[in-house]
Each structure stands twice: as structure tokens, then as C-alpha cells.
Image 1 (cartoon, rainbow, N blue to C red):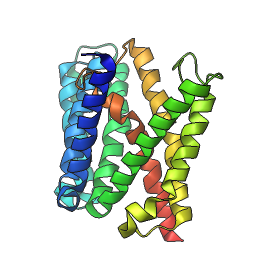
Image 2: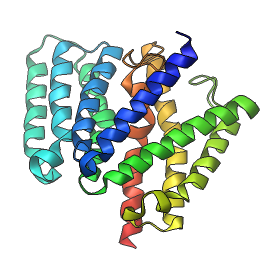
Image 3: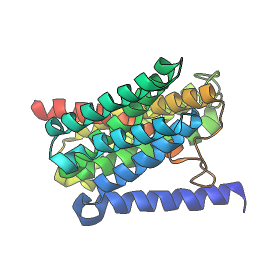
Image 4: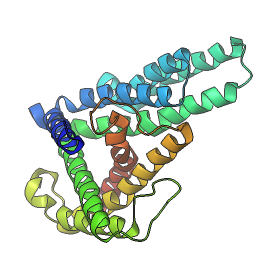
Length: 265
């Protein structure tokens, strides 16, 4: 099967599954979908950096606790107790391990939690009341990625970070940003229940336009450091799930902050 056809088919399948999980039963499956994605992405990240089995186990358990906190405890306040207990146990395990690089292993583990579990936990929290905001974020990220690619292929001459991602250009980034903000202005017609004005949608679009490409660069930096091309091979033609959600996990915390500030005023 030609690579472009493979990318199209499995890319469309991923989009369909994501949309179904977020929109079905008014977002009832969204939190569970975030948890499943979190487990897969944690596995890919720990495998990418060759972390040990105990690291994978503890990070998966703690990460799952963080992501599902709102579903288990109806708020993050109660979630701190088991999360802190698990982190305490994790430190005790390394206290008894005969290892001279504890800080390196623990550093990678906590990076995994901050980079993957925490943003997905925020997304899970948002999904309880604003699952349509999750859907809107995904749509804008897909627009940003697609238009940045198309504009970059046509007009891209000035590269941004050749060392990290040699194909991405300033022209593509600016094109993706402009199209994303423009598309976001119509968000009120697609998601009227969110109640945002046009200027608020433009703020959301600008947030996506900036942080989506940064999230892509951050994951490329990690892959360069680990000397791998893709985070995995779960999605044929696209790589791993982390390759598909790198922009989302870096963008959603800033979307949450932007929406929180706008709703305050």
C-alpha cells in the first residue's frame, strides 16, 4: 500500500475514533479515552528512553491516577493523597535499588508525568463539563497542522529549527497560525453551547496556533535525544500515538488557562 494512502486511511480512522470518543453521549467516553491514550503514550515514552520495567509500572499507575482523578474523586483535592503515597513508594523503591543513576531514572519518570499525564488530566477535567472545548481544540490543531504543512510545502524557505525539525519553516508556521485563527472565528457556529464570543474564539485559535507547533517541536526534540524516528508504530504511516497527540498535550493546558481567564472577565 502506498504510504500516502496508508497515512490517509489510518489518519481518517484516528480522527473518527477521537471524534466518537469525545462527542458520544455528551462526552461520557472522553475521560476514558484520555486515560487509554495516556497509558499508550506513557508506554511509548518510557520505551523510547529505555526506562526500566519498574519505572514503566510506577509511572503508569501514578499517571493513571493523575489522568482519572476527576472521575475517581470528582476533583483534584482528594487525588493528591494517593498520588503522593505512590510517589513516596516510588522513592522508597529507588532507595533500596543498587543504582548509581537514581536521579536520571527518576528525572525521566517525573518528566513523563509532567509531559503526558498532567495535560491529559487537565483534558479529562475539562471533559466533565466542556467536552466540546476538547473537540474544538482537536479540530483547530488538525487545521493548524494541515495548513502549516501545505503552506510550508508551497512557500517554505526559511527554516525554524533545522537541528530539531529540518522541514518546518516560518512560512508554514505563519500560514498555519493565520488559517487557525481565521477558522476559530467560526467556532461559535459549530459549538454555540460553549457560549464564546468571536474574539474569545480568536484567542483560542491564536493559543492553538502558537502552542501546537511548539508541542510538535518539543516531541521532535525528545525523539532526537532518544535517536528514534517515531515514538512507536501504533498508527501505520503516522508512527506512535504520541506523534499524533504531541501538539494536543502541549496545547490543552494553555487553552484551559486562556478560557479560565476569559470567563473570569
